[in-house]
View 1 (tube, rainbow, N blue to C red):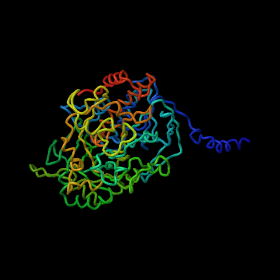
View 2 (spheres, rainbow, N blue to C red):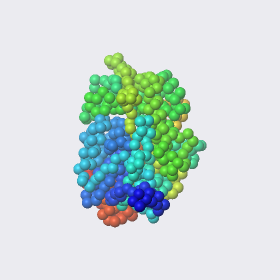
View 3 (cartoon, one colour):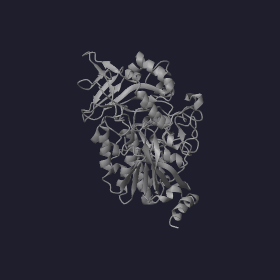
View 4 (spheres, rainbow, N blue to C red):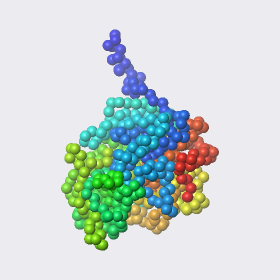
Length: 558
């Protein structure tokens, strides 16, 4: 009889609807954050600080046991900041981490800075290496997320492991780069640039639109820098306050160098291209640099190999799309092609004063113990999905269907009662600021002006140039940007925030996402305190939120 009972339990439990999840422990935190990029870490920190009597759980949904996401394990250590009137407007959690790490930093050091910061809060726990396998929703409320362990195979493919974990919470925060929780909870979403004016959308993108190209960061040595910071041609060599180097340049090389043109002509149709370079040393005095220059096209950020055949896999993908696993593997393989390094070495500039060459003329790839290029452990996703205000947000809705519109981002004012964003002032939860930096959506975009030209924003959206070009002022970020269309107890500071695709071109950079993360964490604390879901917040709730954010060091005013 003792031998029969366990067998009967294994047979009966799935039939009763419990499945393997019934056999796992149930965690019951008050706030659950999925995703541990700067947005998720900021949300966790702010929630823990604002609600010290509540339990906060941060779920790292990458197969890497470190915090920071793209900013750390992804290798994107060139911090995209833009000063306004000589000052940094993205304060709060990001401002604290930035002050310690610098603009160009050692990725492991930043991960440690964030971990030390979050460890100050005994009510905050971290669960590493688990992703969402299922979501239980009742009456537009998330009741439970069902997590499962993820691991990366030697090939680079991320797969499910056996360990499962049930988590029942009260408030949930989606800080994933693919809007995974928002999507699986049943909220309507707009993929990629589908909300663009129809005259700027290719014919095959009226129903399902492309997302901006992804990138795989990689490491090199042998980068040559001048003795001191300098502007040489279209290249800028700078050092941050910590003494670390960063560089940006190569537009002329991209547009005119025969080897680079030949590489992009050959590999563009295969879904890859080299763009002008951003790169940063991996901390002060490091000879190793992280490089951002390899575009990977046709990636659907929602699509992961481990979800194939399940409802988690998107049903509206474009023909020929790549999963994130396929893109990561193919990009790493391309780096090993000798033609890639030959093209990369063309990104150099000669100083007319000294005659010396600087840049990547002598660069070499850093290889791991298996002889493979050292790359970011997660793909640099630039765009995935956007949360509309209502159910429908098709072509032409970028200025009507979202909490932050393209017009508001481009035409933000210099003060409270000025500009296209003035209506957000009373419900502002932070400031967002950068250039409206579109990366290409398909290889043809690189030559849409008739020949290779960078950046692509102007020739993809000539109406933007006619309206004034780059934003002059920061945009007020409204509380509504954190709200999905349907789910009551979900806040979205990540990629699926309520921001139109073209406005996202400005707000997608990590400092802006951390600002949204701070607001989501404090809003979660307020929701628990007043027993009111974020969608039901009153003016008094928003005022409390604003006061608490400023207390935590956020900047809300221009």
